[in-house]
Length: 564
Ligand code: ATP
Ligand code: MG
Image (cartoon, rainbow, N blue to C red; front, top):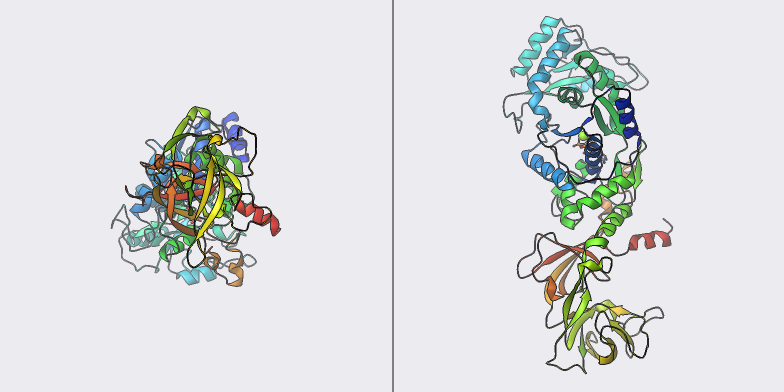
């Protein structure tokens, strides 16, 4: 990874600096632990960035570990997709790819050790009874009637659980901690349950599976993780994390769990459970639909890994949860592409303009700048002839006061070309404008008048004779509400707030001919419009572009107006 930027100071980095200084640890080992039950989203990117860049900055290492302890929801296709996403973000786990399922045997042994220490027992209560016995925040729990089984009986039952002798839900293994602890997680939590489903890696070998709380901390210990960074919702689980480690691990340094605030983004949802609904119920075309906040979606949309890493740096790492404005993410991609995307002219809603005093047979090549932010990217030639396209919205027959673009009798500049003046408007029998007629001033080649006269607008355009036909998919935010889950308490589902205009397909777009042989994933700025990326649905005959982000943030204007 060529990321040379330091991680900005944050409380986790300070803990690490302190641990190294006090020699509590001699190196930094972190991990990113996804559960392979869905695709990664931009929230995961925050965790990936934090874990990998901290390890990198302190010369340590970061593991990629699949937390695959629940065979019911997990799948191999997610494993591959997650690996691809982490690599794409620019991070490398080297040889440190692990699976919690590789530790099943060791975890089983740890459980046996706990039983032998009289710190775990097999419980026959049903899941509902366990819940009832657990008590509440204000009432202590009631001990299970099976709590005082002998070590021998527990070992016998636990081995028979492993051998498949009992039905799902009929028995669990529980840690024996404290039924009156103020922390509910400490009231004899379940550490093994019977699940008679094959696992995507261990197949039929197991019919009992460890719970997250049991497997996670011990996997950290097995791998020598020093700093186990997770999101805030695990704070209440930390005493349990530490309990298992203290009971079962003698080696130092013991892994330390540190929680940070998860990322929430406006106008989207970042929960796999919700994202999977959007996919399965057909609200989007798939996990990589360019409107999805998944890394696969953002990649297809045209986001760069650099822009996402930059975003992670900017939002910072804290302890209190907040909503980050999606405009910040959009700012990061604009900033990145402004420096490197080649400028092109593309007309998305074409209106034909005939330049009546331009010779029918004539064609000329005009020089256009590839990137005014970086002149080293050079220039290109764009063809000009008698018939061109401009955007329909750049012409108005009866322009209101503040409309400075083309109108009858008015002169405007065509970018890199000439001044043109509208002399006629041609309509069909229904009164719809079909084309407009203009004259051009040959003296204004390149876009300036020798007599110094000014025009108030510069339009982009494409030569009709040379244009490439394309489809452009205009994407907008997926939801109309900053927090689509806000009304869940009132029983209103987040999907009620899907933006009906989040995808508008324009299928008659006209592109300048230099866009002829574009490749999948290439990004451009279409002048005056925004940044666009070549989509995987493109064919040789017909490129398809995704809008990554418009040049300006129309939502901030809207938010100001409505004072939101
Ligand atoms: P979701 O809530 O979307 O289902 P998850 O937490 O169940 O996500 P995991 O695969 O368990 O998904 O997550 C892997 C890691 O990514 C965990 O360490 C988790 O804390 C972190 N993570 C998940 N979502 C976010 C988020 N929005 N912001 C920061 N970190 C996150
Ligand atoms: Mg999780």
